Image 1 (spheres, helix red, strand yellow):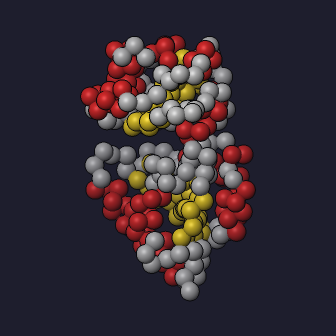
Image 2 (spheres, rainbow, N blue to C red):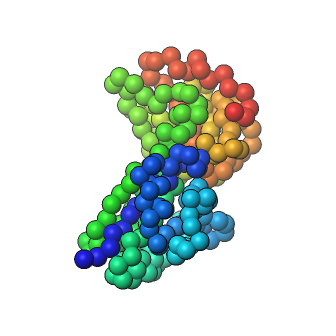
Amino acid sequence: MSAKLYGLGVGPGDPELITVKALRILQKVKVVAWPAPDDGQSFARSIVAQYMTPDQLEIPIIVPMKIARHPAKSVYDQAAQTIASHLDSGSDVAVLCEGDPFFYGSFMYLYERLEKDYPCEIIPGVSSLMSVSAVLQRPLAARNDVLTIIPAPLPDDEIEARITGSDAIAFIKVGRHFERIRALLEKLKLTGFAAYVERASLDNQRLMPLANMDGTAAPYFSMILVYKGAERWISQLTLEGNA
């Protein structure tokens, strides 16, 4: 009987936002894998570093930050083989994923390579979308509002079409696309209905009306929320500078 693979959602950044179940599993497994960029530390691991133990075997999965899928594909192929060897030897493996494993999470690429051969369990986590809404103290949607999540790298015409059919919009993967998204929202006269958040739930988080945001770029962990529905949440956008 094979050991089990866990996809562990560890939340948006605040170590206290990991679920009780995820913490229990993290502290019982002997093998922990985590993704990291090729130019920095693992954010997922940093979230739960205080909960890990020295005797745990760690498997770093270094993913090149490139647009092309091929480098990452080979990385996930190799990581899946390494993880499979530990599962075959009888060791459960927990793969850390910031936010939620199946909400734009890297774990899904390991899951598709391993789920046919090994028992898997997905532990959902608090997503960045929920944490951004919480720190803004602004609901995402209500009643029959249509909420649309838009990856910022999409072309302007596609983004505009999706905005037109939505009451509430969340832009993710903002980063270097910030200035283009802000210009598009200005064109659509939605800047006054938008809020900007970066590094939600961390000590260095920033939140403000989009109109107050200076600069032409944003960090990777940033998001823009837009609301154009019938509720009166826009009246709460009186934030100034840092939270």
